[in-house]
Structure formats: structure tokens, C-alpha cells
Image 1: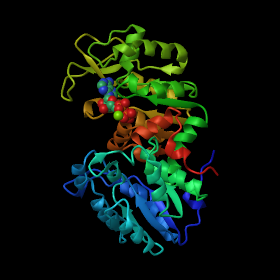
Image 2: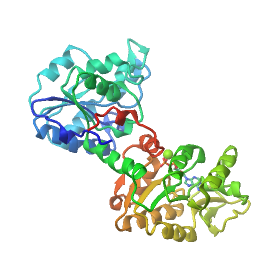
Image 3: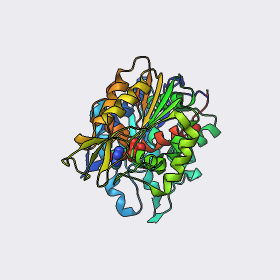
Image 4: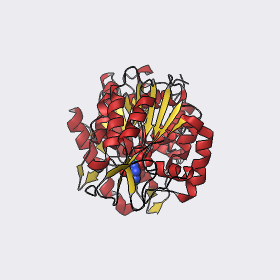
Length: 404
Ligand code: ADP
Ligand code: MG
């Protein structure tokens, strides 16, 4: 079902409540990586340029006691946002009460206001009651009462049901006020939702990363949808064990060997495994490496896919019209084991007429770090959320956006 987006809303003169993802790293009051703030700017700009009053909500970190609050104030983020968007941003250091209400009511069209960290509501009077994180409906209702409509642009928390995303949305809808996706959210729905649920074929999934156990849901869902599933990365060797190959000291989940067998049986020739690996005696970048076939020698661990596997994967990917990729092909953090991930990333970037989508926290980090992100159709901003979306789960943050 198509979702309402911010461009469907009448924003002029409206108090537009916005859930953004400003969960950025902050050290000693200084914001580190600003990419999440930058990512929210197009939607914020659109709202203010259309005469809306942008009232921003975000969580930051985890608050378990009163002592956590000071270090997790959003004040530095308000300052950084102001600098990046080149406009004043009013920061309200509270999440509730007259000061917040007056500040919202005093806004002019085009103003921006940032509310204190929504997780301040998790600890009230010293008690860890998780009003925000457990979606206390009263809190969502209260926040919703501050505005005229709600725009959710925080894909990174879409897999969670919190007061500041789902709570506000439900309360808004109960009052017949619109709930819309921001541009970031819209893009995630279009690319991940589109690829997984309505792919152009051939549809190839590439699944790698560390553990089979983390990826069972994704494999299960995509097994029913993709035309081919390429498996790489550390989880390869649990599949190798299932096939009876020797795996040396490679990563293996012994309790998932039976699961791997079932997946292999269910998938049949849909599943493509690496045929060679780069191995080393130690988990170190400067360890001596060699390329071996499907049996990993004793005393060696497989840390990347080998050149024949890269070639094999390229042959499978060449005609793909949709590619979903989660999980690096090797230990990309070390330059000597990054080639598999880099080659697959480059090849995807050069595919013509294909929609190429990357999701997952480390996978996103990998394509960014290796410089191949720009040529892909979509690199998700949500780690856990993108995985759950690829698993075919309904994400509460998306479900609570008004259908068109
Ligand atoms: P994502 O966060 O994108 O879902 P994962 O967390 O599943 O991805 O996997 C990423 C991790 O997998 C990386 O830290 C990478 O080093 C590790 N990895 C990939 N291949 C191997 C391997 N052959 N042996 C050990 N670890 C690996
Ligand atoms: Mg990860």
C-alpha cells in the first residue's frame, strides 16, 4: 500500500511535528559524524520552505538513570543543525510542560524547534519507566496534541514501537490528522520495500556477514522471493560444514549447521556459495595469506572470498535487474580481506538498468568506507531496521504512516 508522504501535506502555517533520527555520536559535547543530521535536512527544508513550523523530535542514546541525561542532551545537535541548515534552531531542553508548549505556540512559519531527547521520558523522577521506549500512549497523545500533522523521517527506528514514532502517529490518526513519511523514509520504503516485495527480475540477493544466526530471517524471506541467493562472508563456513567440507579455524556456528543444511535443501540451485577463499593463519591484516578451494586447511581461517568466487558471483549478477545486498563478503575492515566486498560493490555499481540496494549496519559502513556507495541505487540509513525490513517484517514505524 502506498504511503502518504510529506509532499502530500498542506504545510502552510501548520505546526508540523517531525520524528527525525538525530541519534549521532557526541563526545564531550561535540557532534562527530553528522551524516544523520544531513540526511534529515531535505525534509526539514521542504517543511519550512512550504510555510510549516518544524517541531523536531529524536532520541539520542539510551537513558537508564537521571545521571545519563546530561551527557545525552540534544543541545549540541541543535547547534550543529543550525550551522548545517544555516538558520536559527530553537532548542527546548524539556520533553513536556508549559515551556515546550509556549515555545511551539510562539513559532512563526518557517521556524525550526528541536525538543529535548525523547528518551528523557524513559526515566521520570529517578525511575526507569521507559515511557518513550515502551510507547506509553499518554505520552504519544500529549506530543501529538502539540501539532497539526506528523512527518516520520526516522527509518532507523521504524522497527521499534516508541511513543515518538508510533505513539504520536496513532494519536494523530485518531484525531483525523495526517501522518506522512519524510523523504528519507519514503526512499527506504521505495527501495527496500520495492526490491523485496515487488522486484524486477532476475532478482538476486547477496547475503554475507558474520553469522548465519543473525540472517536466518532474511535468508528465509528472500529464499521465497529471489531467483538466486549468493552467500559469502563468515557464514559461508557454516554452510561449508553442512556440506561436509573441512573449515579449518574459520568462523562456524556449530548449532546452526542443521539450519544451514535445511536452507541448502530448500534453496537447491538457487543458492550460490563461494568456491574459493582467502585464508590466513591468524585474524590479522599482516598475516600471510593464500587462496584455497572449498576445503580450508587445518590451522587456517577463511577471511575473504577468493578470485574465482568473485568471478562466479559476477556471472550470477550480470543480468540481474534487482539486487539486495546485506553482509560483507569478508573481513573488509582489514585491507587484505576487503577485495571480495570491494569487487562485488564495484560490479554492482557498474550494472546497467539494475536497482541495487544495500542494507545492514556493517554493510553500509563497508560500501561507504570502500567508496562504492555512490553508484548504488540505495544505501540504507537504518541498520537493524533495514534487516527487519528485508526479513519481510511489518515495521511499526512504517505501518503507522497513513495509507494513501
Ligand atoms: P550487517 O551489519 O551489514 O548486517 P554483519 O554484522 O552480519 O553485517 O557482518 C559484518 C561483519 O562480518 C564484519 O565485521 C566482517 O568483518 C565480518 N565478516 C565477514 N566475513 C567474515 C569472515 N570470513 N570471517 C569472520 N568475520 C567475517
Ligand atoms: Mg552488523
